[in-house]
Amino acid sequence: MKKLIETLKNIWSIEELRKRILFTIILVAVYRVGCFITLPGLNPALLSEGSGPGGLLGILDMFAGGAFSRASIFALGVMPYISASIFMQLAGIVVPQVAKLQKEESGRRKINQYTRYITVLVTAFQASAYVAYLSTQQYAVARVPEFSPFMFWLSTVVVLTAGTLFVMWMGEKITDKGIGNGTSLIIMVGILARLPQSLMQEFHAKNLGGGGGLLIFLIEMAIFIAVIVGLILLTQGTRKIPLNYARRIIGSTNAAREVSGSRDFIPLKVNSAGVMPIIFAQAIMFIPATIVGFANSESSQGFVKALSDHTSLWYNIIYAVMVIAFTYFYTALIFNPTEMADNLKRNNSFIPGVKPGEPTADYIATIMDRITLPGAVFLAIAGILPGIAALFGVTSGFASFYGGTSMLIGVGVILDTLQQIESYLLMRHYDGLMKTGRISGRATVNSGASV
Image (cartoon, rainbow, N blue to C red):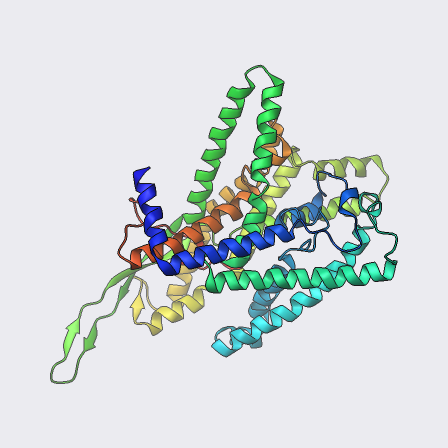
């Protein structure tokens, strides 16, 4: 406890860090307030308090911090910007002109501008679809009669587009003038905002049930902490490839001296794909259920039920296989061993016992394939843990935090933010946040799209 208080004092004593933390807290507070401001044309008093949508809309509502189900001005959150960023990232792999822009400073500014333009188009399209969603019975009763359908559509599209752009702007400002990755931090705050309520619901459900309910709740909390520790190990796990630098000659001709090569390593992440495979797998799992849902046969209904129930055996098997497949796919997209081998050759560095050039690229690719398998398997286990928790009687709200998208994003973003704070402490010659070593967040290694 004394160490914690001393660390907090050190953090607060660094003026620049203090200003960045306060700036981040203010913008995050503005975002959370905006999540409770209802769209114009809807009476907030008549909006029914539901459990929120399911399926793909449930994922969007989770990323938006519940603003989607509340019909808030930030209902679409920052997801259109994330979608546009992923599109530009994939375009850099497929289109050579975009890949060339990504390597230049002026080109990266152009890509950022293109990403904003795409964000506007995606948001306008999603906002139009959201108007149709607001025509459902849950929201139709809250519509203000004075608003004509056209005016409601126009105002909703304009407000939602402006809201998403404002959230995108706040995320960029947090990244520049605050602490941590702004976009990821906004998503993480929205997700973890549901944790206290879910925790209280689980506590009351176990206490009201009787029969040792409190003991069961304590066991669930112990397992929950163990899951968090496992996710931290999955996020921070790396395979270090030893690296040597060639001897160099420093100084003029008359006073030249030979400097022996230094040793270093290449940290390859066990889970370099991050949370993206789980997001892709969740999105794909809802498509068959949506398509087959139009059929009326009993066999189709059974198939739909199997794919819709996240506690069923077949759902978890298919879901785990898809997570593993998408982990390999996304890792192959964002990880380029040939480019890494070329950079090593240009920097006069080499892997001991491996020839420079193509043999180095093949060696790195082989190591990456080997460590991706256990990373993909553990990621699949983390993805199906919420379904397993729900199968053992945990309430659906609290079960979603037993791994899955929620905790993977939360753990990754918190580690990144703590790593930045620790960097400020070490630069001012203070002790770090941990005695056992420095915190390694996702930013230390190639992490792909920031989510």
